[in-house]
Image (tube, rainbow, N blue to C red):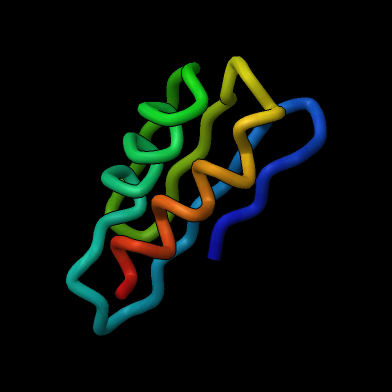
Length: 66
């Protein structure tokens, strides 16, 4: 699950049984929209610099999920 606020704050949560890490997904989001973040395997948070790129960032996360 990825939540991004209008101000650019985001949270990423990954459930058990997935080979993905929330921190890795946070890096994908910030690579698209700028900013910074990180966290553990199951939970990460951060802030993007360009909230207008939030949709594009979520699209990149969806690509990773297949």
